[in-house]
Amino acid sequence: MINWTQLAVDTVRDPKGTADRIMGWDVDRTTLYMALCAVAAINAILATGPVVLAGQAVDDVARAALPVLALLERPILLFVLIAGGLVVMVQGLFWAGRAMGGQGEMSDLLVLLVWLQALRAVAQAAILLLSFVVPTLAGLAALGVMILAFWLMLHFISAALRFDSLLHALGLLVAVVVGVFIGLMLILTVMGVSAGGL
Image (cartoon, rainbow, N blue to C red; front, side, top):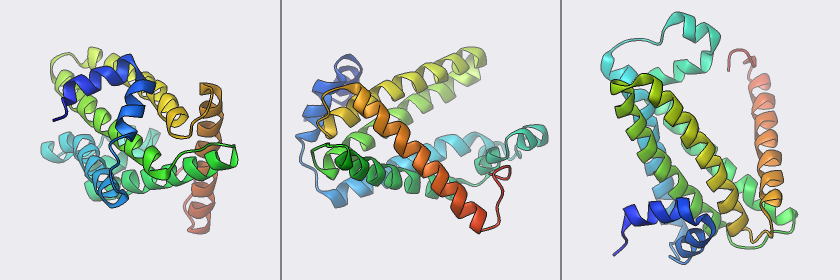
């Protein structure tokens, strides 16, 4: 039986070694996509829960400054965007990684990103609880989690695609994120939605 707490600790202590262990689970792709949808749903609930449960809309000033905050009032739409974004990210990282000489299977990348999102959900729940007690500390914790998640992501990409350095993983991640963003902007432009509206 897997000790999930120990696995989470090991992920932070030794990302590459833990990635190799996780890839060894040999989970089928259908199960992985179901797990991806599950962690996307949990993340969407954690993000929108406080707004929906409070029965309050996002502050008008905040909405004007950052229109994307309106998604916090729409859990289902946010879930679709998170799940869809993860699927696109996995596909983009895998195929672009292969083009850059990477090896490995798509299921390796998928299982690692699902595990990373599961860790993110746990961290998000902890930050949410902390925000009720010490809001300032919660903000700092959220920043720390973002930095740690980025670091783990680089290690996971490198392990899944058998890259020999984190610089390859960083270059790939930047290229895919920029490509996805440009593609999204083109699609939204065709649909008549401005970048400011996003």
